[in-house]
Length: 291
Length: 260
Figure 1 (spheres, each protein chain N blue to C red):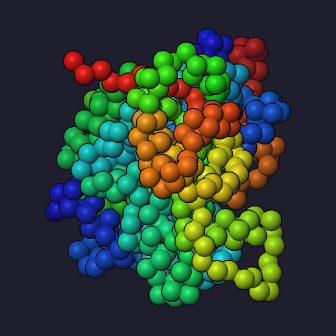
Figure 2: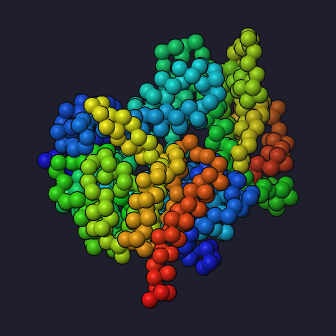
Figure 3: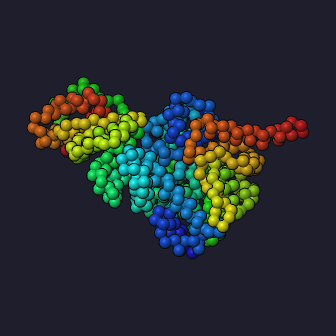
């Protein structure tokens, strides 16, 4: 069991910890505020799990699942959920989170986070699954807003309305992926400022930032692909500052999953997030002193 | 409006099988062509699983060539989606699939070679435990010993082949690419032992292989010895057990089940 010091929610930004860096982190103990792992990378890899337990003794760790699939109409993957629970018991993470999406269908895993129509039927299914996940884990689950390329004509509510109602029904909290809002707003044509204005700020527990890749579309324009394979885009840093103003300081995590660079490159992005956060709140402190 | 289950079935077909998606695009919004947007998910599914298989079987690519390996990995991802989210577990059936591909007849040892590579990958992510000493076995009554089962290191794998595939994969591992390599059929019985990113391959005699693989398959010591003795009447189970323990491969013993 990790110590209370490790369990405390961090105030500085963390980074996604992927398999190529596990051995280095164990050996060098870099100056990182906290790490996030995907349980799917370690559950079938005993060596990686052993390294993770070592790391979790010294750093706060967050567990971010890509496989629980709370949006699957054919049911969530209960054996997988049980394995996630076993890992949670082992490392006592600061957060456990997943996505408002689906990735399994009738016993098949599609290795992607697929979109949902925002309807009463979907809300009923997702709410039941979040309840089940929270019961199985014995703790609060954070639900992340997805990155989207398509929507559904059948949707009867916006994504923010859906998430807000999900919070009301289940008591879950939200992982607000700032890059996903930026990307989805571009791809689907909604107002990203309105999105963060309408999100329930009290429910936001954590923020995510990740890189994306623009690709040209036939007929003109471009679609932003959520690749997590590059630095955070400049406009997203500006939007991140706006999100901080809306939500207040929150633990922020830098995701980098493809073309993974050396850890110091990702840590430099985390340092930049901290700098943005400090400058977002510094003027208020000056104002408070002056008044 | 179809149910969520029906929408997900249609989307599953579009993502995995590039199935007839006529029913799906009218349901979608996003950009000028939502069907093209859907292809982003299909591309991700294909590319991520193909990459995972190529990363897991680099020696297969070395043997058959990148084009053959890539086409096979793409076809496998379409035909056999993962059953669970841990991609480290995906690909156990890939060696058998490879052997059915057009052109695989040029490599009659391809399935066995790919299975060996799969075992190497699985063994290398295991962790080894403290092993038993021969003294700890000495406390077991000699008459009861044949009824005991042994628990072996989790990074152990046993496989046989009708070709010396261990020699072939060592060429790959050593970075050797000879212009010609004499390669003739020969039965090999292999033990793979790995842990924490490392592994080694040992050739065993047939009786030793039968004894050790039976123990690994949870046979009692007595049953494993009988299997080996059937193959070679001069096999010495006591010495074989001693070697198994002294090689550091036994981590626990299970007491015989008691019939009530």
